[in-house]
Length: 179
Image (cartoon, rainbow, N blue to C red; front, side, top):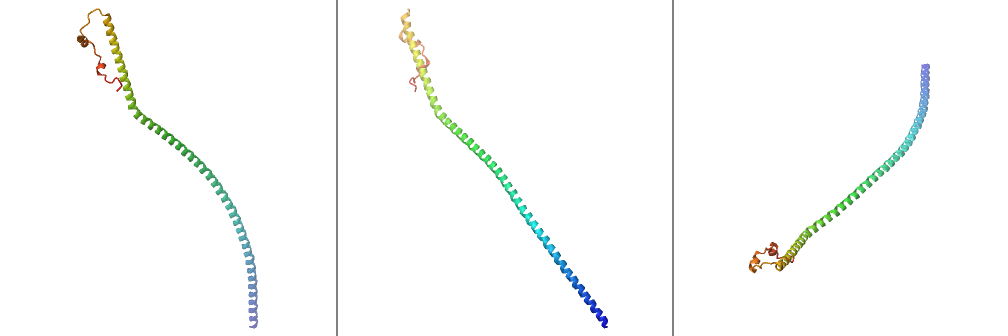
């Protein structure tokens, strides 16, 4: 039994030694594997940081370019809008000036038209009165010269007046002075 116990002890010792060897091997392997994993994670972190920095730089550059393009487009749009607004303001002022001058012309025309009509009517009345006076004077001259050269007997005064033609403007014209 003792030999059996020694064999079992030897087996246990061999098993313990094997377990220790396996444990040492596992520890060594896990340490080397852990170190490799740490190195790989460090490499991955470094790559991620580098990629993140380059991506951030690329994003900043793209944003700056986009901002510059947007500023240019907005600047051009603003300039076009301002020029269109200035053009509209100018046209509005021109239209306002023309409306004002048209309004003034209409007011002047409305005020001056009756005055001009009255002045022209008065002028025509004066011209007609002057023509009537000229006709009367011509009639008197003809009448006087006719008596001087007339061989026949003059007609009685009442009969001569009623037979003498009366011009319609003479009896109706009471406004020889223009009124």
